[in-house]
Image 1 (cartoon, rainbow over the protein chains, first blue to last red):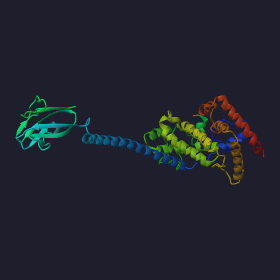
Image 2 (cartoon, one colour):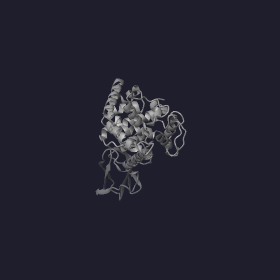
Image 3 (cartoon, rainbow over the protein chains, first blue to last red):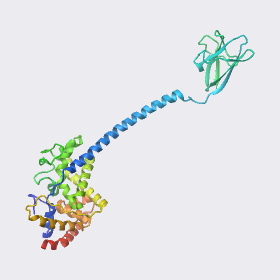
Image 4 (cartoon, rainbow over the protein chains, first blue to last red):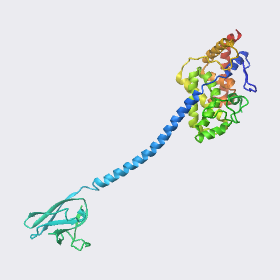
Amino acid sequence: MTFMPGDRRPQPDDPTLRRVVAELRRPVAFDPAIDAGALRVIGAGRRRATWARSRRWLGLAAALAASVVIAVGVYRTAPAGPRSRPVLLRLVAPASSAVVVVGDFNDWNPAANPLEQTGAGEWTIRLELRPGRYRYTFLVDGREWKSDPAEPPAPDDDYGAPLSVLTVS
Amino acid sequence: MTPREAALSPSPAESPARPVRLSQGDAGGGLSGTTESDAVLVARTLAGDLAAFAGLMARYRNGLGLYALHMLGNREDAEEALQDAFVRAYWALASCRDPQRFGAWLFRIVVNRCRTLQRRLRRHDRVVVLPDDLPTRGDVSETLGWREEIGRALDRLRPQYREAFLLRYVEGMEYEEIARLTGAKEPAVRMRVKRASQKLRELLHDVHAG
């Protein structure tokens, strides 16, 4: 029976219980592997926590990158706004051999939208345009600008040629 | 320092709040022979030094393990409770308001882990564990028999009676402290200790007398 010097712990009055308590107080050594096991668990938890933190940041970065990619994709491929509407442009130019239309809808590119001869001196083209306001004009035989008599003239004349304004609703 | 804290310390002369010298080979993580106080080791742990926490575990392993062993009845469960308590203590260390009383704070975690494990396991395979200070070879069988009887008797106590008895007489806690720790009212604690004592006396009197 061993009592540590200076032990101020209470003692039962009963001699049997005093003996029991003395026995229960006797030291028992526990394996240091317990500490090592706890450290392994703690280490794994710290790695998980670090990884979770990294993953959160990686996730945020990935989400941001994905958003940018999607936004760019949408910007480039998806139709912006409402659906396009068919528009028929018509010019009567009986003595002409070629008529093209240039305007805001084709970046004023003379090769983009040539008109077809559909009757005696009648040239037409069918375009798909989204709602909006477009300035345009016809180029006849590669040298003569002609505005569309069916539509109002544009107030500005930046190109030095007669322009028409088409409003698609 | 309460009597229980004194008993929990590696030696009666050493306090968790005062510099404590760990025995060689007992401190893990390169802290063998550290004289740093609990408060310093807690601060170092919170700063990310895992070796400091290893020092704290080494300091309290045997004292806390003894309680878990008596409470749960076998070394395997005691070790599980102890390891679990160490891990929980590490993650909750920032909530230890008084690092100088780290030992008392850790002990509370161990007590709770023992309660949880007791409910979960519902095992009663109490195994006799011999103490480290067996004086002579001749005492082994006597000690083994006596400890076996004590183990059986403890096992027959209700867990809250066993807990109250161990906290009062083995850990040396005041009734008020036990009440705070266990959440029971102080008169209830006194009653539990009394009933545990009566039961143990009944169960062990004949063995002791014989």
